[in-house]
Figure 1 (cartoon, helix red, strand yellow):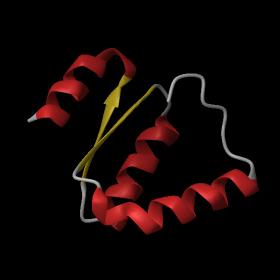
Figure 2 (cartoon, helix red, strand yellow):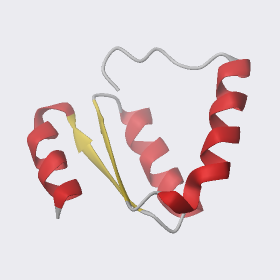
Figure 3 (spheres, helix red, strand yellow):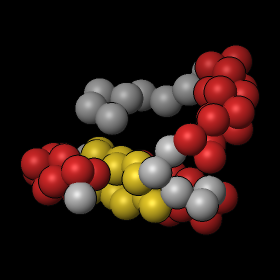
Figure 4 (cartoon, rainbow, N blue to C red):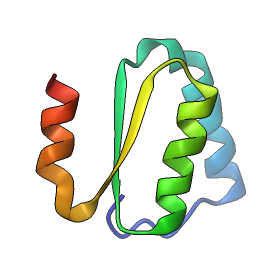
Length: 70
C-alpha cells in the first residue's frame, strides 16, 4: 500500500464486492504499509475473514513475503 491515498466511495464498493465474492479463496494475506490506518484495516480484515491476515510495516516487506510463503 505504498502511496495509497484512499478510496472513492465507488471504488470502495467495487472492492468490497470482489473481496466478498472471493474471500474464501484467500489463504494468507499480508498487508504491507506505512500508516496506522492501514494496520487497522488489516486487523479489521482479519476479523471478518477466515484467512490469516497480518500487517507488516513497509521496512518489513521481505518478512511479509517470507510469511506468505510459509
